[in-house]
Length: 185
Image (cartoon, rainbow, N blue to C red):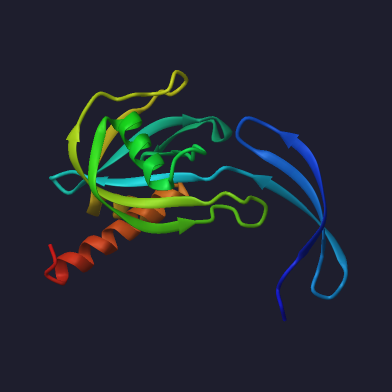
């Protein structure tokens, strides 16, 4: 098995400010044709920023698709002229006013691989200092600090539904435990 689908035709359905939707005809490995609806997205970044008191910085913001306020780690969509790390640093500063140091990649996440090409890059950092928040004109958030252990508990109790935040919290907790237990910190 090759497990590959060859794109035969792509038809643009929608071009928005953030997403692009296509209807693709593909050839399956058995030679049959199938249709795929694909959401193109520029990608995103999420930062788990640790305070000196072993707390993570969070933002609460209204998320229109769910019609509710969601607790998340600082995050945002990628801008074309910047690397994922540069985007992460920018988003952390804009949303929380924090400036991090010692950034470590926690990998990447495919939030909805069945229909969307978005890739979210995850980072961990320690907070170096604070400046003024630099929120976008249409952005309204409140910043919260939650101890890492409490954040893990909240993920396990289904109190944080956001996937990128869940993964970044758990990877951060594992990283911190590994480095502390290993005598590296």
